[in-house]
Image (tube, rainbow, N blue to C red; front, side):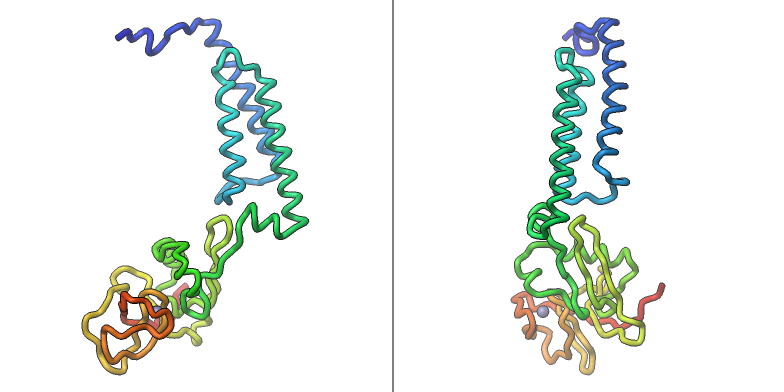
Length: 227
Ligand SMILES: [Zn+2]
């Protein structure tokens, strides 16, 4: 094994200087092209935007250090990608069908303090994902949530019940989100699969709403949200 081969190989001082210039030029180009997307910044990306960033990223790296790759080719490719991006955003503004195809639709996850049934039945998402989102917004149980919407960029928007309208709901924090073995009378329990709340006569009762076979119930909470 030759250490000089690993670290230097055939790099000359001349090529080192060329790399320096290539990196500076590409750096300026990348910033300019990203400004052309018209976006102000990046927090969460939709799949469509991620595609753009990934393709720009792989185009941008190679010309920085590849000797026989002229920068003009990278400029051509990046221009084409940005042009396609602008074309797609324009088409999305004109047609909601194009928008749904490229960005996906926002999905209702919670309605009236319960999880939306057909969404959880299709198994499109795990409880964990949006439970954590709701916890981070200070929600303790589903009875505090009137509406929960999963946005196309992965953000989670929620509308809360006013404090006096808070109802019993499924707890979202791990210590309370526990299946019970024993039940007490006159107590509300929440189905751990769909959030349905009812009195129980038997800990193995089938949930009338989702009819999920796991039959797991947690003690429902009705605390008001504290902000
Ligand atoms: Zn249920």
